[in-house]
Image (cartoon, rainbow, N blue to C red; front, side):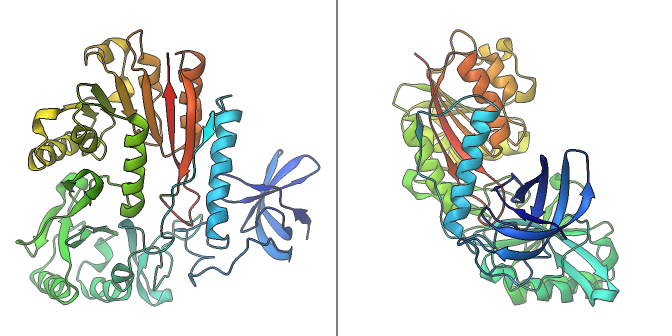
Length: 432
């Protein structure tokens, strides 16, 4: 079998070796290592390979904490020491900004990171009956596969949720609809934990009794979702606390539905919001836009500064919950929410929102290219861009810096998803 020296990691945390000009992507290999590998897919310019043996290990290689690491696809970097994971992500961000956007920040910010374990407060787990693996499986998909991984614990989930994996198997296997329940979504708030059961047919009376007994025994709230995310409804217990998270630094709290988009890592999100607000530096009397605002994760803290904020989001449900949170937090007079598809943004539609002193952008993986293209002569002097995809951040940074007259003052990574290849980042753009 061939032997290669690993030069770096790609955006999926695969080691990259080169043989006669061809890139070899090796699962599980780390930079600096000499490894033996076996290719399973060959193309003219690259090969995909499995790691067979580490001949010379990296000093940063560690023993994965999870016994399911090599099978489960929930994590990609447990074999790499946590602080080195962050350094790798910082390098991916820098390389993306330069190689895609041809921009470099004046300052690289210290990385934001927190606890490496038990951080994941939201997760979508597959459910499947596999008799030759012992029956019901509940977990993430296997790596590069549609199969459900046979996991019994998960150290990136909060311990009380990890402890539910085996009891959920037992519950789902006992239901009459065991083969019509493809997914369970987990959402952990500050006052309760919710399990959303995706059911393709209704529960029977006996099923309902089993589910209620499970909820009582494990102190969880059960939602049932018969169709799309908007159909998820609380089933049992009906009275009780809602899902919430808070940002104590800004004295704001949020209620959310279990199928809403929220940041999965509450502790790191608090640090991220704090940094974003310091970079934005909102002042009383300023008018600030928060685009792709969701349920107001940044909008309400900005409003707490005394600035007036306009939050724009494509989901009417999230906007409604943002408005309700603004009311509950006494900020309704400082916040205006609106529904708009920002992927269809034009200079005219953006101009109708009025002039802004500053702007915060927090788009999904697709980035905010239509927004940055739409910025006109009255564009804000400062933009804070929170990104979950360094490639689209770099693409948008090129437009901002090379077309719209901005300078990339600073950028840095936010390790929102430890042990995964996911790179979250934040960047500050300013124009004269």
